Image (tube, rainbow, N blue to C red; front, top):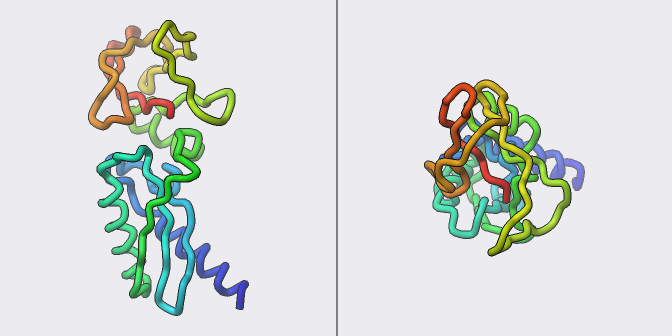
Length: 172
């Protein structure tokens, strides 16, 4: 019986994970790394754990509704989506496939951090991070135009080689 439940949870996790992110539809929730778990609670009842990219993320409601919709379509009558804040989401949770898709879509993926844990914040001078490569031509000769772009998790940058503007998914 436990094997069946585990197999069902895995299948439902895959189904829920295939839902596109409402702000970045090129990525699924699984690729974005925000879908944490699916727990079967009964024959037609399931609880889903979802972690927002940041606490005030406006897309969490749309994600929850989309997950409910897709699981209802697969026979789950009672779907509860629970927001979990621990462990906190970080850009390290984006899969390699998600990073590839961002780059192909013209968004520079977040840089891979050297160490795990909290991202240090400083009010004074900070160390220079690795350059952000242009997703169009690959040049690392890029400049920051705005700390915020179409969403709070992205910055607007421009490549000085090909002159194309592009979004950069900021590291969190």
